[in-house]
Length: 403
Image (cartoon, rainbow, N blue to C red; front, side, top):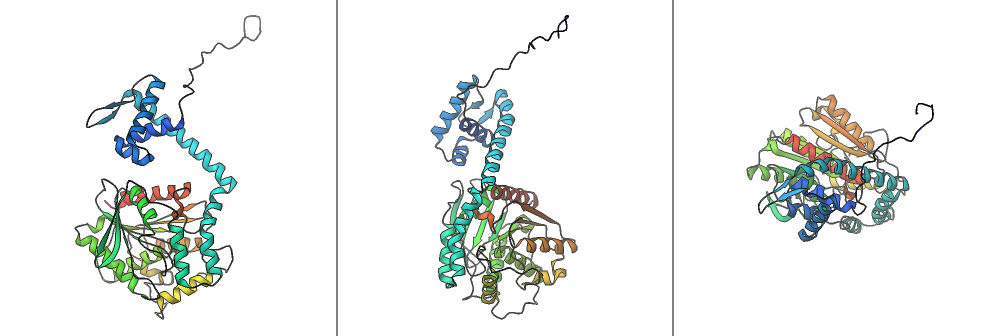
């Protein structure tokens, strides 16, 4: 207000706006190069050619009016201007991604896409088809995605067990042994290249996926023995057991627990920890809540019982190796566990019970829940933000635990 009590217009100098021509693609390119400090790795991360990425950076520098990067033949460094832009650009991009994710989640688009991908498997399951056709539908689901291009993939024989080795360009020491899901009767190392590749990229280390023997042709303990042989092969290659993490998804997570218990029972060198994604750990149906035969469910109680019958083939359910929830004392002495599950997963109680009973035995357990309604949501990391966040958390756990 002035001396006469009248309001005057505030005299505030407005900050200059960013040039309208700056687009999100410019900022994403800059952040990738700033984080990698390598144009080749940043281009692979963004699915761009190096010349295209260089054009994006040069265009951004022209629009801003200063150099953001110092480039030489052997090095890429941030300028002071680049350092000033980096944190703000990260915050802006994270806000945009969160906004888009929230909008999609509210609209149900991502959940519907996951449900559409699961539908052929669910339909064949409810129709009561044979296991071979069900396995083929599951492989078709897995084939809907590609592994990250920056991850190299090669076949290996790990202790006589065929499998695949997936590794980023400059892997950290150590390794992850990932045991794939599929109810002990489906799944393959080849089909799991996308998920294992994403885990390798997130953990910045090598991931070994064994093609362990499947039921009904090879019932228990074949899958456990193959997985243990693959683990011992990693150690024979000179990998310190303190730098090995065992991971698994769905039934593969249950298999990972069986492997941990087998290793302990036979007094083998223990791994550093385990990552259990949407674990199916209750083969003996010890939980009070049963899995209904709901036509909307991919994994029904009927299918689970059929898979268990094939897998165990008469092996007693009171064996702690296959029924850890019924023998929680067997969990004592296990290494740190990261357990991840979706809040709408019908196997959520199994994840919670496993975490609770392991904690009762003084096991270091982290339970992470994600707001998704589908089992095995990690498979959908190429489009599901919660899956990517879960893999990033798994990667951080692996890097921090396997030291």
